Image (cartoon, rainbow, N blue to C red):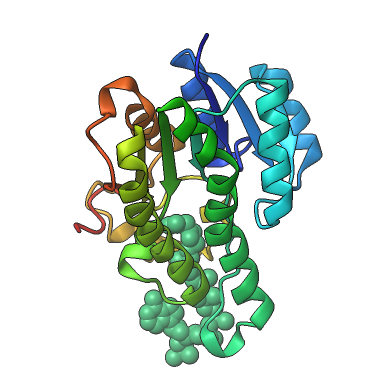
Length: 240
Ligand code: CAA
């Protein structure tokens, strides 16, 4: 029986590349998504990967969703917490809702999904959790106090949960992507993005597949001694 993986926000952008890469490695993959039914339908049609809809910021929805995946597909061995949103604005222009939604979804989603998967991994003595952080959680970013705080929180969450999971065969790691050519980055104003790309030593945006490669390694059988670590994939933009 192949291992079962769930990728949150797994039908688009970096998440889609991760879903496809894990499938190519022979895992049985399920993609979670929150909003875009049409994109999810096309994704399933093109990849054969089932898409399950719920909001990772909703605790009970995550617990119920993980239980549903476990009964319909199989117990979840691999969790990739990828789902995330941006609500960029400088502090004085940022509403409480913009702050709270980003914390609830980006950081809260990791907690909610881990609650849905960790007990089963512990029982079976094997698990892989990969949390997608960000360069902006490591270095900060003008206009992103919400996102930088949530992503920075993900890095702390990863190290704490790694300590709890180690003796049960569960590894917990993070990847910190830099600027990747997805819809999220395309939404950054062009003049701002030009300045950002100028600061990337490799001289270009990253590709989603380059993040997915890191995820497949961390989820593999070979990575059992890697836990609590952060893999930065950012073209040299921030050396941490
Ligand atoms: N450093 C210093 N000053 C900056 C700055 C920076 N990085 N960026 C903008 N400013 C300055 C501007 O020059 C301007 O100054 P003046 O008023 O003197 O002209 C001032 O800040 C503008 O401030 P405002 O509050 O008026 O900001 P705004 O409403 O124009 O919007 C913003 C600012 C929303 C932050 C906009 O610049 C923006 O969207 N920036 C992109 C932020 C970003 O990189 N987001 C990443 C999204 S992708 C992602 O998050 C994925 C990942 O993990 C990497």
